[in-house]
Every structure is written in structure tokens, then in C-alpha cells.
Image (cartoon, rainbow, N blue to C red):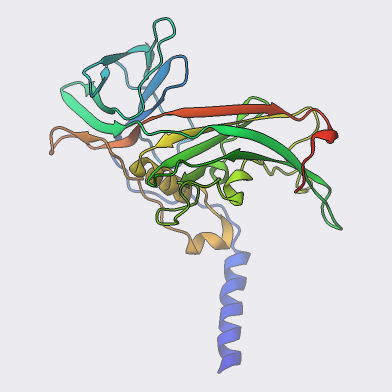
Length: 308
């Protein structure tokens, strides 16, 4: 019986791997849905909110912006931040002088008026820990890999629990945006309940700021070389924002090939934005207001390498 089962599995696998024709299934058409991209922070400079509409899965062009909306954000103290359209679908708040957006500990209410419909959300600005330093270290190569120069950031989560973060990193000024490079942390660990508050971020998070790209032959390149620079931003996010980012990773980091048979089915990621009319149009996207702490460093010399 075991040989029959083994043969059946082998036959199925052979059938699957022998099917290499590209197919384009007819997906059920759906009405475009408003998408609100409202990730705001207290970094100096302008703040931006983008409005688009969803589009078919196989659509290969960027979604068009939604114009003529009225967008504002109001804080707990009643301060109003107006976002004005500067190009189709892009709405910008511009500071006056040294003004920055937001204050840690305050709640913020978003209002997006599109036609006769009003979409709203609320978020609290949490704190972000200071980044103490960035170091570089050597990972020795072997028979199948060359030496790699990797980076690591050092930061300690505040003592009280319940903080969550989005850690962004930039190589030579360019943000690394692959799904596998979306780094989230709950306190100093990966998830809620890990009891990692008040301690340095765990090693896998500290060392997640390394882009592992490949050359044309599929060989893994060193994340950094002498002369490269890396900068890191820790942005506070709400707990629902933390969950949103992790859902987004699941939906976008698709394995492809045979592994796709066992992947989580595609689905819209949850949103914290609602239509004030319960029977009105649906909405997607997210609203978050976060504090940011950042630090950058250039890899100037091999003499700078620390102990791994």
C-alpha cells in the first residue's frame, strides 16, 4: 500500500511540475474600491495622503489618483491639519517654519470627504525608541558563499509593554521595499506576549536590515560593501497598524510555483477606516500616526568591523 501511495504522490507531483503553460484565469469583476494610504509621522517636512481606487489583479499599470477630495486630520486638542491636493490623488500638509506633524500621546482623527461620502478613522501617536548605533560585521563565507558584510542596529525598547513598530531601512538612500524586507516589532520581539519589553531588540530584528540580493547567476551578494551607507528608521505604529503590516506581508510575499498551493489565499487586508454611512461605499487602506527615530552610517573601512 505504501508503494501505491508513493507512486500516486509522485504522479501528482510530476503532473504539476510538467504543466508550465502560462494561464490567465477569468477573475470575477468587482467595482473599484477607494483606497486611502495615510501613514503619517513626526519627521520634519511635508506629510502626504494618497487616494486611489483598487483595480483588477492582473492590471499592470499604476492606479489612478482620486481627485477633488477634502482631507483633514484633527488632534485631541482640536488642532486642524489640512491636506491639499498637489497632483491627482496626492494630498499634502505643509509645515510652517520648524513645525512638525503630531505629538506623542495624542489621538488623531482622519476625515476624507469624497463626493457625498465621508470616510473616517482614529489613531494614537505612540513613542519610538532612540537608535543608539549601527555597526557592521563580517560573516565568513564558505564553499558555496563569499564573505558577507552585514549591518546591525542597536536600540532598546521602553520599559512599559505594549509598543509596536515598523522598522524601515535604506541602502545608499534607497528604501528597501521587498515584502521580505518589511520589518515589524512588538516591543523588542516579533509578537505580542513575547515579554521583550525594556530590552534591546532581539538579534533577528536588529539584523533584518540587510538586503540579500542575487547576481544574474543566482549568487547571493554581500548586503554591504565598503563605501555603502545604511540608514534605519523606527516608526511607532498602533497595534492594528502592526497587524495590518503583517497581513500585508502574508498577502504580498507569495512563494510561487508548487509552494503556492499551500499559501494563504489572497484577500483584502483589514482596514481601520470606515464609511460614516454603513450602507455606503467600501473602503480599503490604513491610517496611522507615528513618531520616528532615525540614524544613518556609512561603511568607510574594513577597520570598522565589529565582532559578530
